[in-house]
Amino acid sequence: MAGGGGRASAQRRAALAALITLLFLASLAFLLSATGTASAPNSAPSRLAAIRRHAEDHAAVLAAYAAQARKLSAASASQTESFLSISGHLSSLSSRISLSTVALLEKETRGQIKRARALAGAAKEAFDTQSKIQKLSDTVFAVDQQLLRARRAGLLNSRIAAGSTPKSLHCLVMRLLEARLANASAIPDDPPVPPPQFTDPALYHYAIFSDNVLAVSVVVASAARAAAEPTRHVFHVVTAPMYLPAFRVWFARRPPPLGTHVQLLAVSDFPFLNASASPVIRQVEDGNRDVPLLDYLRFYLPEMFPALRRVVLLEDDVVVQRDLAGLWRVDLGGKVNAALETCFGGFRRYGKHINFSEPAVQERFNPRACAWSYGVNVFDLQAWRRDQCTERFHQLMEMNENGTLWEPASVLPAGLMTFYGNTKPLDKSWHVMGLGYNPHIRPEDIKGAAVIHFNGNMKPWLDVAFNQYKHLWTKYVDTEMEFLTLCNFGL
Image (cartoon, rainbow, N blue to C red; front, side, top):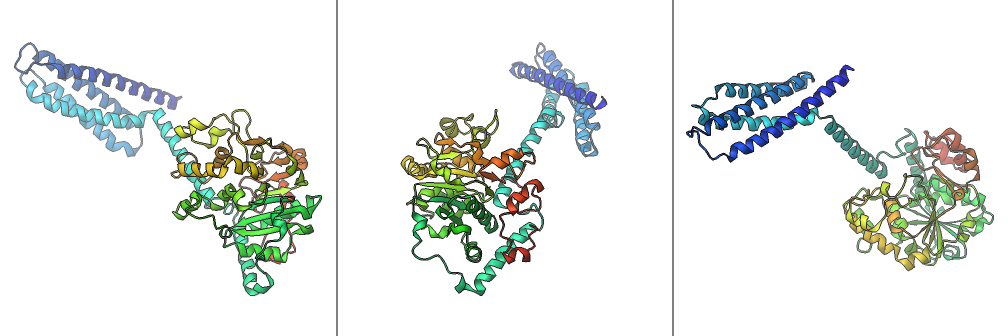
């Protein structure tokens, strides 16, 4: 109760100070509009009274702030001293004002009042609870944005969330690269002419963009085991050039199961991906570390795979539990994208992901439009080419070069805008999300899902993974790969 009374008292003093300041401004306007001089007997008394009143009022205001400042910590001692000093000056001047001294003291009084107004204005923020709350809110927002950038850039993501696990991933890559160097002839590069399955539009084609070889191996293995016809499923894995040799070693030693096909690619395998043709490449080469290149390559699927008509995009943190061939029979109704909608009530709509304070966003999009998720996406590449979605994406990237439309570290807002009005909702049984952050997903939902998605920070290859979900992922890990034991993976 005492704390609440103090806050109420401070608010009353702030309100009183504001009222006095308004009265001062009105009186000052009257004073400055006066045309008489100190020698005019009729105007001098009124000017004298006005000056005395202004000095006394501001002395009272500063004294009130001094009383409040005394209640604060020792850090406010200098502020208290300033309040009392100026208040004493004003009180002294008020007592010295007379008809004979009005002309001499008017200038000094105005100077002291000006200093009092400046100090009171600066101090008001310290006593204004609403101002403090707003500043705290602004600080929280700024820190949240920094954390998002860091998380997306890999500085605070799940790879450092689990202590030893990042060392295990790094160890695995290094062991695979050492094996490549030790026996390069046993691990050939892809043939100059790709096998016909890689470009056969009659097969089921998937795209995965990742630098995590262990996670990708689980996606491929789980999909192959769930498939009725594994040999008809083709996985196109795109990674960074530095990780490509490690991927080649893994899949050479542990070939995809059941005759499933895997094509391993790097960014350098696509000559059209250059700074002159792609704003993504240009921004990355210009030093924009907020743009995750691998994530944004998904916007070039039609150019990467010109012979294909439909591609399913999978994230590397999913597990396939049911044959996905049915996704090639989903009727998109002429739309480009099919995805799981994530909105419910007022949550997870476009307004959450995009900056609607920008006129360019307000003119093109509805903040109430339902958002959707990456993880499992069906893309009609023919419709994509028809609607020139890559060109639209390029325009958006150019507009967002300074990060004003959306946070560039996040690829989802770019997808929401690129495929706005061009996305069909995917049945929920195809894609169950949240196994990387939600410990309360219904078991029946997980069991009935075609794909379960470990989106969130608690990835299944990390020590922080939920125990009740982790086995759903680890059962597809090829534990016969000797490097997993050497690198201390706790599987």
